[in-house]
Length: 147
Image 1 (cartoon, rainbow, N blue to C red):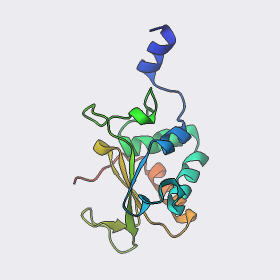
Image 2 (image 1 turned 180 degrees about the vertical axis):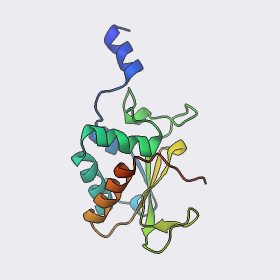
Image 3 (image 1 turned 180 degrees about the horizontal axis):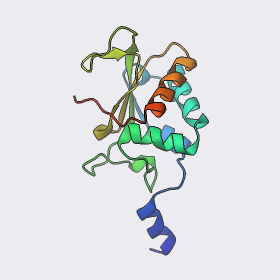
Image 4 (image 1 turned 135 degrees about the vertical axis):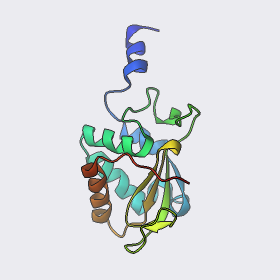
């Protein structure tokens, strides 16, 4: 191991490779069949790509509990206990009337940081999704839902 490899392991990558993140993501629910071809997923990655590097790190922090991208790429992302756990996006119904943690619907993106998972509502347009991500970044939240 040379000094550059050691630095990478200790400090992580300086930037987030959004293409690697997207390619290494698992999709569940309504997003499973179409994966990256689903319109909401396309919107999500468009929004992520449009963010500044600092905002991408804050979104990663919200979703995984760490602002550091995996040193060896998102294909080797681990959970809080160190076991391999892919980044996952699961659909939930978009609703403006349900807000409870036990509901499988709502207007907000939810993070399960221990599982590297986002519950992403099936937004009606990219503007709604962009606004939801902006809210996460404005609140600088790192919350999660207990399941």
